[in-house]
Length: 378
Image 1: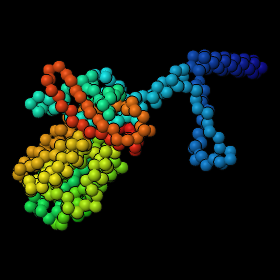
Image 2: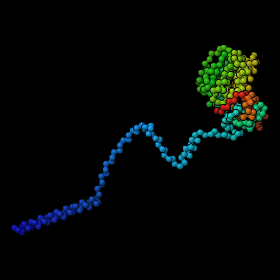
Image 3: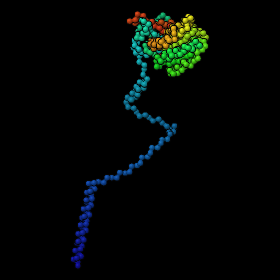
Image 4: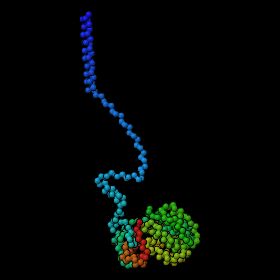
């Protein structure tokens, strides 16, 4: 019996040893597996990003201006150059070519038409072809341009009773003159009879200009001198462009103006005064003094008076005027005689060039230096 008990104890011991060995074996296998496949560590949960709060309006007493980030080397120079290029200087071209004319202080501005052989307008002359005389003395030319420049144009149409049947063709001729204009021109419309009415101030809107011409009732007498004087004053004071033109259409002599012809001529001698182009409709043949007055108004300012023999000529004359205006030379000179001496100064311009036997220059005959208008050309 003792032997059986001993035998069972030995067997139990063997079982315990085997179990221990199996447990050790299983632990070893587990350790080997951890070394071959290490566990991926659990990443900590990220803290949620809080929503950006709406910034409160800073207290003006505590508000500060943030310092700008320093610019890389050369950035300031590039920025400065960019600002300068935003306001480029006007290029100045060769004196014998075309260049921008800037009216200098004390400069007298002339607009000249040159007529060559066969009464054709000459447009290809250089600066060196011209000589300007003031009171018979040659003057230095300080600026020169042979391009079409914008014009401030005043259209004055006689609206007296005798014009009733003539207005439609006159208005059409005036509209054709406007259509032939520079895109930058500005035009005003004055209808006159006993008085001049500014029916449309300066604009480039053709519809408004057409409407202003049609806003009339032909009646009454003719205050031509008052209309010209008033238009010249408005052009001098309100026009945008340095070059100014009056385009006048009438069929009768002045018979109701307060101003005299002499006063109007004096007004047109002021600096900045317009050039006058006049179309005289049939009916002036028996009024030689009226014809002479209109010729004086035109020629003294560098313009032309046309005497139409029929209404059918008016449209063609208006086209001639447009061609003349668009093909002029702009010449500036600085008088050698001080303006402080005042007085009326006569002007004469001569032109000489190879290939031309005779060149006739038409421009204003003179100006009154008493009133000095130091303005800059546009």
